[in-house]
Length: 130
Image (spheres, rainbow, N blue to C red):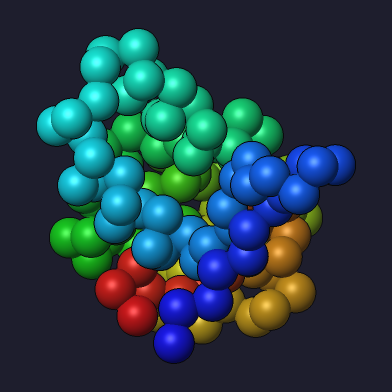
């Protein structure tokens, strides 16, 4: 069952609707062809959180292709293994082992590296496709 809430003004007239975001996305996709460029731009702005960083398609494609997330984010941020290791208080060899899968990243190290890279720890430990 679709859960929708109607927002009313002080006179009781409907002024808005709250609905699950996925339903909103589906409606927006269907409405795109009927919207003017100005309305479409407003829709895009309304669905984007300005506090959330966006990622280039090349980075996303590397993750989707199964490349190691630590390696992808580290190189995207322009850090060498040595500089990341210095910031994290470990060795470049350890970073290399994490990136090649020879070592498993602990939750504490994932949190530390994620903080340095400006991402969520889950971005380092969860597969993009899971």
